Length: 141
Image 1 (cartoon, rainbow, N blue to C red):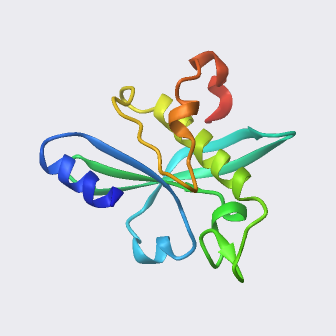
Image 2: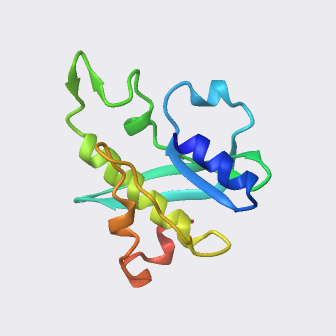
């Protein structure tokens, strides 16, 4: 649904940016994803978690940014294995949410709308309301 909405908004002349995890197999399906020259280094509890950002220009006005963190998103299934949720799903989607906010700080302009998904996250609409000072500029290098 998000992809269809993004395409429809882009066709109407809006600049649309989507952010999603780089799940296992996505790069094979979309070989045109190119890495950005930015690395993520984000706090997650008592540790720092690193990741990368990739981008795919789907069509004029529509870009998809992929959060690449193999420990969290390079798994065989998206949310669960053998019928049980991954124990670290909260951390995975907190990382995705933080990566989304940090990416938004480095785009050409602030987002007008920052919709989030329901049920599994991300929590970006909650986090995006935090002040710029909450996120040091060194988070993305």
